[in-house]
Image (cartoon, rainbow, N blue to C red; front, side, top):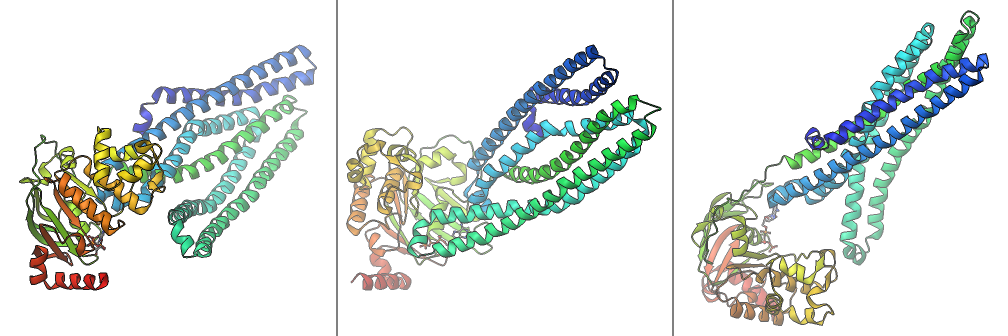
Length: 568
Ligand SMILES: Nc1ncnc2c1ncn2[C@@H]1O[C@H](COP(=O)(O)OP(=O)(O)OP(=O)(O)O)[C@@H](O)[C@H]1O
């Protein structure tokens, strides 16, 4: 996946790798010139000293420019690939069915699109800045160090072994703490998000202290891991320096024992030390890189899981059909993907176009579940649902969305303007359409009081509107496209009785030919329905008018009597 994502940036990638080669070549070349400068110094040859000095500056300059270009190219690839991955993941999520989203959980998908994509971006930066640099620098410095002072090859070998051991032990210990970071960060994000979203509940139930304690506990755990990592670092860095100084001292000592026989070796010792430092740098960078890479590969896997998930539901690419508002459920059963039990069992009924149908039943009876099957948010586990005589699975997505409109129990608005929110129900809605829809939903009055009317702003999740206003705007969004079937899933719960009645009257008058399915907690909301469906524990236990059900259906009568009691 990563390879494919990088493929389209191949010219930048090749350029970046070429720059790495230049950077390494210049770093390895510099000590060689340093040896010659020192030799010239020992001979007091001013001309040569100046000449080599200029060479040294030019090489360092080339290395610097190549390093900068390498960073720019690596950043270009990393930013480009991460933007592509983020967009690809978002597009995929858009193609997901409701069941897919539930399987991952919305918060988790957000972390994958943000945190995980950032991890991959870091990985790509590392790949193009360090991956090639580490082995080239290590091998080059190793060979040149031995070439510089062949007699001291064993000092290099001992240094490599010691540094590798220190790095392996330190990284091994830090690795498990880095693993815990990710999980704790997810947890802290979750607590903070939940807390801020539910801030009204937190404040009204005086839960600030409890929430803060929960956050502190996780934050302290994170602090613990951070401290351990910094302790390891604080030991590791001096350990490296110590090992390097021992090696340098040993090199100087052994060179001094035969310096009379080989005076050139004295000049070589400076470059020998530089190569030792480069070897050490390569090993440390290699260790760090592998640790960061292992974290990033987990993130890459998490993104891959989203991108490679097949949508749980497909819409066929069929021709548009002019569907009527007739609706038929034939032996429909349904269970949620996360559940073995049937939430709906063997439900059959039919509704004629233009009818108003109520759906009632106790909490958890399956009313919302039944409603969600009509716009195909889920497919039934068994049985068929037909609109205008056509199986839902034979209708293309756009056709179905134009035919069925659902106003959900929880009114959700998107940041933007009132008009933009209404246009989600009909992309080309005119001002007249918006005025009509808001009149039906009893939203017109408060919209017209706002200074910018349909251009008035809506904050994220509609926080600048009251519960009742949000419901009215959601209903307006639901009716604006003149659907053949309109489902109101308990969507007038925040409206007073008078407004609810006005909405129903407007619906009956303005959307006379639309099939209206009204899910209600209160029987009073559906007493005038042409037909009422009574659900109980996922089963359809009664169909009829209010009068018929009061006469024949014990459950319905019981609910009615209880509510009548509470209303009296
Ligand atoms: N997304 C889901 N995943 C798993 N189970 C679910 C899901 N949504 C609902 N359920 C379960 O399905 C059953 C029916 O829920 P549903 O929301 O359809 O009931 P309802 O009649 O609309 O209730 P209410 O009147 O309280 O809104 C409940 O037992 C509920 O726990």
